[in-house]
Structure formats: structure tokens, C-alpha cells
Length: 225
Image (cartoon, rainbow, N blue to C red; front, top):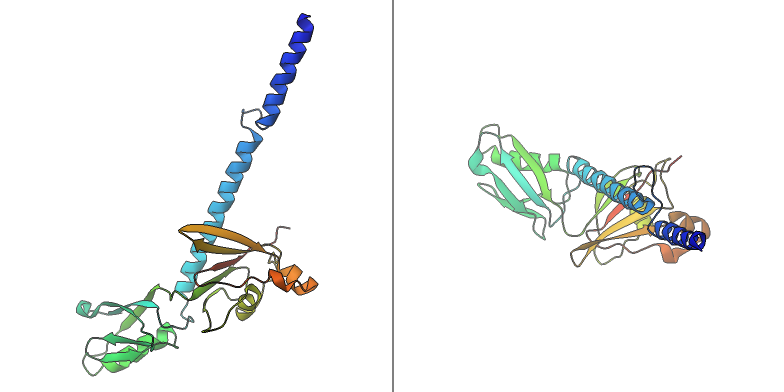
């Protein structure tokens, strides 16, 4: 009888261990390990995205757009420092020179435009400009694409995942095309969606080609060999 009770006790004990996750020698359950791994993966992804956006901000090839917030400085002229939003007609209003159209050109070209106008008031002006905030119609395409970029939603036209990737030169040779991620903020919370580009291009399943929204981040991970 005692042996029977002991067997029942052992069965219950083993079942409870299994249901709470198998523990390793250190006493850590598999469920805990999976959660920790998931948190690490999210942390790595967030870091990659943050680094990708920072690299884009440093890229002089970005074309300025209405709605971009720019920080303009003139060397040795601190009273000329301004943070300005590019207006809907593509201009900023700057001291001494008034309205200057800088939309549709690169940062370097915009700096030169302002410097050319300031030279009538300041001797040899050296203008520097940084983007502090992109237009709210911006979409970031990052990761394993040929030209990671911030692109602008075309006016009165939708933009899909496949179109966005095509606009930045397509995938690199080591891209994981079946696990493209869309990161989107909804009601203050970040939402993540996976898109299988292979199913769209090879199987013709166009319903998977998600329409992007302003502010979306499109991230293409690397294939794991």
C-alpha cells in the first residue's frame, strides 16, 4: 500500500514539473529560457533598428521633404541657430535671408543654398544642417536591403511592402525574404507583423503584400545559415 501511495505521489510530482517547464541542472525551466531568449531577440532587433535609423540620419543622400524638422547652424554665429520645420511649400524662413526652398534637395545642397544667400551678410558662412525629425509621412526600410533608406509616402497613393523594398534597390544576397517585419505604432503600442515576400513573388499571393502606413518601419533580417 505504501509503495502504491509513493508511486502516485511521484506521478503527481513529475506531472507538475513537466507542466511548469523542464528544468535544467541550474533549476531554470525551459519556459523561462524561451521567454529570456524572446526578450533578447526583441532587444537585438530594437538595437538594429535604432542603429539603422541613426545611419540614415547621417546619410547626406537623403532628400529633404516638407514636414522634416531641421537644425541649422552657422559656424561662429550662435545667434543664427534655428530648428525649423520645412513648410508644405518646401521652404524655411531663416534670419537675414527670409524664405529659402530646401525641399527636394540633399542636406549638403540645402546647406550650400543657405550659405550662398548668407554670404551677402556674413563673411564666408559655414552652414551645417541636421535632420532632427522626419516628416510624418516617412517610412524606414532597414536591414538586408541594398540601400537602407527613409522614404516618403507618395501623395494620394498607397505603398506596399514589395514596392518599398523595390524602391531601395531590393534585397541583399543574405536577406531572409520570408520573415520581413513591419513594426507599427498603434494606440501607443508597437505592433509587429511578418510578411513572406517569397509567397508574394513566387506564388503570386498578392494579398500578403501589406499596404504601409506613415511611420512604419520595414525591417529585413539576415538569413541564418
